[in-house]
Image (cartoon, rainbow, N blue to C red; front, top):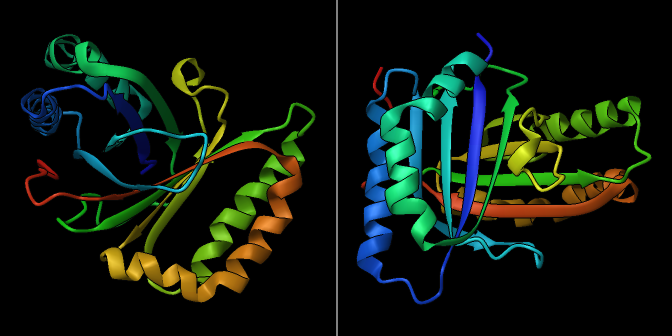
Length: 219
């Protein structure tokens, strides 16, 4: 199985009525019932760790193939929610898709799971060999950082809405306390950052917690 990860970041307009935000989130979370979807959660961002990022909400979903993701994207219900509930209240949207380098289990994440999403924008002169090295560093983080239940990474295959960010990863923790535990591995994490810093033109890191009202899987 080659699981496809789909992450969308939203910047909701500052003066938006909370009722409209709730309608957007309810509409997005309702899309979990569509056949191609094996996992979907949408809600407010817990914390943004990047000065270049001001996103307020996030959607994370999973599919068994690129074709299933395409079917989801083209589904009338998805198009309706985007048109009626998302676009009218959002200033900015970006999306990144990648094929997971492993089969993350469980595919659907329980409520209160904490997710750390990282997007990397590479400098123009970075070649495929270096990209492979960067992905290798990301894959190795699970071995050096306790508390990570899942971590997947890969190259973005949908550049249209990715703002130039080409490598992505998602790390899953049992909860916020476990995610915060990364601070206890600060020396190791900083060492990994040093290995890739010279190749980067930008980084977005977003922390997210699966809300109790979020649906997960129709399997």
